[in-house]
Image (cartoon, rainbow, N blue to C red; front, side, top):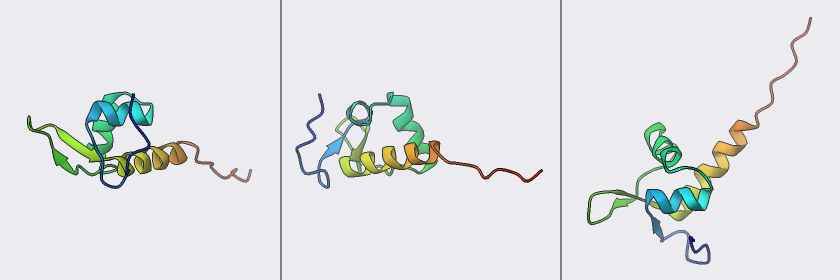
Length: 76
């Protein structure tokens, strides 16, 4: 379980930790990085990406808000 009581501005999460915190699958976190929604903050000792916790939470919030977009009704 990911600890959300830490300093979210300095804590770095792996892809799997970020996915758990955002309640998405790891491939979603990788897609956010690829699309530029989530910026990589560093790498672990094996060269795997790490992300700031606050950035993960912001990306999740932004993505969910965009998914709820409303389109105006077209005039007939």
